[in-house]
Each structure stands twice: as structure tokens, then as C-alpha cells.
Image (tube, rainbow, N blue to C red; front, top):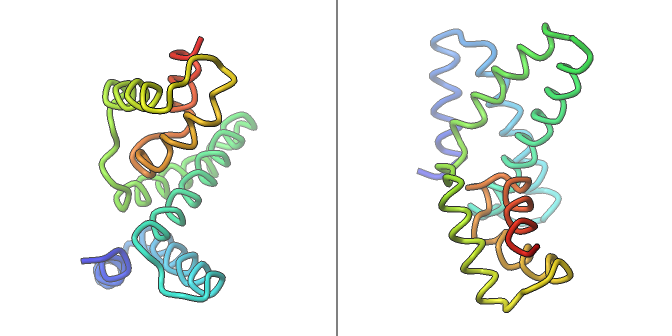
Length: 147
């Protein structure tokens, strides 16, 4: 079952169960996917869908951080709920040890040795971990191994 089919099924279930928050997030994701489809002018691949989900999740995490700093617990709470729903559609996340192993292998593949090679390493790693690891974690581990 692809993402759109799963979203449609979950949307029906959310309507039946009167889960307004979940329904709202599912509709938002469907809308974002539709906008991306029109923007690209073609059907979305699984990779495209994952990119859209990542973007939506990142936006919410950034906003959550801002709301927490501003002591807006009412808004932060709502965003936490949305993040939980979005994470249901994300692939299984890699552990830090798994990401470290991928970083080490990629550094060896690329032949990187200094921080100047950071862009080359990141460019090679990100397609491997897309949607499965946080970019900040990957960046930190690459810096750690190149210094």
C-alpha cells in the first residue's frame, strides 16, 4: 500500500472515530502531496512523498522549538500531537550506531580525510539515510569523524 492509499484509509478511520486532530494532519499531508505533484508536473515517487513528509515534520519540529522558547505550551502541545501523527508515516529510524557505521563506510568510499571534504561526504550519505535519520545527527557524526 503506497502512502496516498494509506492516508486515504487512515482519513476514513479518523472520520469514523471522530479524531479531529489526526484528521486535520492527514488532510494537511494529502494537500502537501497534491501541491508537490502539481509543482513537479508528474506522479510522485515514494522518494518524493518521503521528501514532502520530511519537510512537514521538520517545519513542525522547528515551530515546536520556537513555541517552547516563547512559553506557548498551548501551541507546543498541539504541534507535539501533529508530530506524533506525522512520525507514523515515516520509515523506521536508524539508531545512532547504524548511522555511525554508514558515516564511516561513506567516508572510506569517498576517500575523505579533512573537514574540507564534508560536502562530498554529506552528498554521498544523505541519499542513503533519507527519511531514516535526522540530518543534524548525520552532520554531527560526519564532523566528528572528519576531525
